[in-house]
Image 1 (tube, helix red, strand yellow):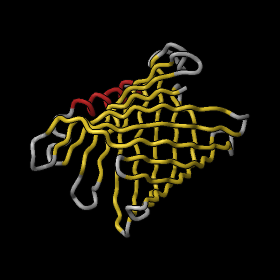
Image 2 (spheres, rainbow, N blue to C red):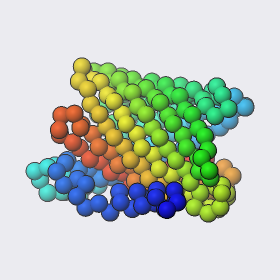
Image 3 (cartoon, helix red, strand yellow):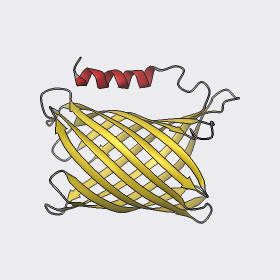
Length: 227
């Protein structure tokens, strides 16, 4: 079984599981985003991103689910990256989070390493961030993400072709001397519109609070536009 079929099976298992959230607090929503990337020169690049969260379903462990729209928040971020090797770069940035009743700020540090295995591309990202808010203690996070991108036709992803991308990430969080762990699994189907634009549609599945045995599951339908 080749790697494309294996990863597509992972995607269908994630979207078809009926018992994944049977004993957890579950929320479902959609998560659109716009990413603008620009290479300043051969060494430096910048990224600007806008993302917003919207809930459409909410269920606690002791109640039946309720379908109701609720706006959650919006994030605006700016990142600056510098290549430090043939396949690696260091990224620094800031994020502003706007919620209906609060605004918080985040500083971001990342190291990204990419390489190719046969006809698909893999990337490793080690990141840390610090979230500052006037209403909550400062949150410190350390995270690792692995991602793989595979063309669904041919050996490389060309214009007007589809590709499959899968991300998995572990996030360690410390806030007010309390530790928490979050795991994410994000399968996406992407399409390259032209040399400057591509779009991805997928699921962002998040499992939070493993440590205190009060696991919360959130699944976002994601729509990402890259330009």
